[in-house]
Length: 253
Image (cartoon, rainbow, N blue to C red; front, side, top):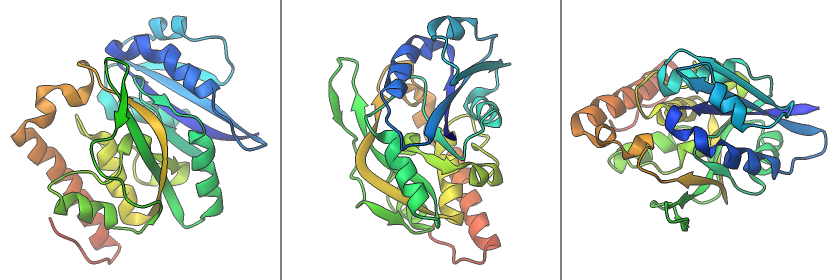
């Protein structure tokens, strides 16, 4: 069987959502000869509470590491992956029907595409499902540099949802995994990926992005102007440095 690896970092407030995450994984259909593995990485203790919530499924691998934050936890999960492709799935989100199959179809059909993102839907505390706040691009190939230039031109507004990212494992490793920042680690990885490789945007929604008070993006510090300027500045500068090393024209800062 060929494998797609699903990486899930778990922080204490999100443990309770894991049964729903697993249910969304079980509902996935994949092309013949393919299966998924789920690398669950608990941040900060031995993961006992995580293991108790999950069934005895050989496709699930649970581990833990001393508290290391979002990037460190994701990278420790990815280090245990064996699949050709790695799909991000946060512990408070859920995959929608057909998500993994559509990712595989794109990456298998387009050798020049290194990563895939897709449309998402917000899951509100009331249970209501609504569209993502920003406009999606047209479905198709995203040329190197387009995501970064759009991000900068629109005052750090993302044109695609980084939580939907699926990437070739060798490319993920070449980029050093998720960027070592306290926040916005998926955005940091996306900006590096889009510098060195074309991507692809899928219009069909692949993710329910749960909105709740304990999520990282709801914390006051996430939108603090000073913190954001330093964080996004580092992300943009890294991507621009990669452009320079590759001999590509740099865009706006």
